[in-house]
Length: 448
Image 1: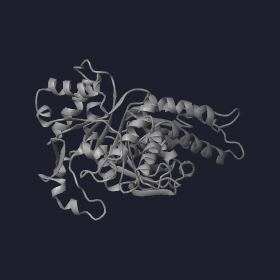
Image 2: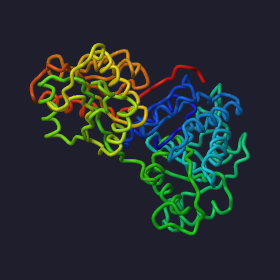
Image 3: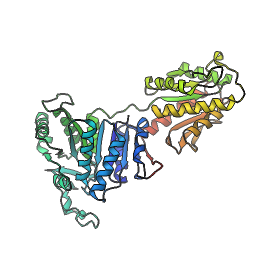
Image 4: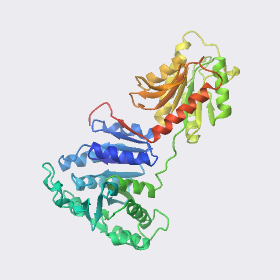
């Protein structure tokens, strides 16, 4: 399950928001407005943060509500929901927030309150007395007041939220944000008890955002030092940093740097057996022998996939799961007529079905036929080569398809020496760690 779903109203903001989560060590992907809603869940196993762009900043409120509703339903369940809004309050803040609240309350089957922290201190956007300032000036006193498409006539955050919505809004002033923690917690708890839909908080620094997020959880029984407040689920209304603050308070940041790696080997050569033996001896591995069809050397896909899934789920973040038809001499089988093609095809299907259920951060294949079969099953057009590990063993990432961008290293069964597979997995580790800190961009096959 993805941990965070952000619904943004434009692509620029979505990318910036995703980059922030990537810096926190959460694998992030942005889905453009051409993605099909129903395919959002496809990205759950591979990413911690999914940022969906509705491209709705200047659309009618009813269209905004519908797009937010569909995005939330398609991306549920997640641990944190956020509607990413413009730092200068342009767009449909009220309708987008109200739609997310309504949908979240329905799906969570319990009370949900929005925490609105629209300050972006690093970009010189801060919130004081419930008003948004740009480089120290009220928004309506800047050039934004003359924006030909969406002129800004107020910096009052609560007023903007109420436009086009029936939201009940409460505010937390800067004196409480910077004061004693118990007073801040008590005020948020009071606002929740009074039935507000949205709590708007002042902030001048990122530390202020973190303080408010932590206090919100405490005020509603979700954090340490919990108060007498009623237990609620919080969603975020923010410009990016606010959602990060709430994610940190919920313990969603500092994700494990990578997920396990998956090795798929269909080679029976003596060299491959030595290479795998050395890998298992020197790196943290979990080996899985495929279940074979009766009187056959070809894996039974239905029986094998649960074994591999279980191994990946049990593996630590940097462990290696090895699915190999032959690990030692006792595994050698004679292929019958036609099985030379059936074996790699079965391993390809196993790989696809495993990746549909669990997340891995890198794929190593050995055997040319196996590599080709795996790419076909993943709808990959090929490998974008980053370089060679050794001659005829290449590293890169999958091109196109649902698993586009996945780090992959591949080599033939007769390539290298006893330590070559270890070298390949070490290169895969480097690629996986680099990718964990990057933001991916994806689009599905059909328009919204």
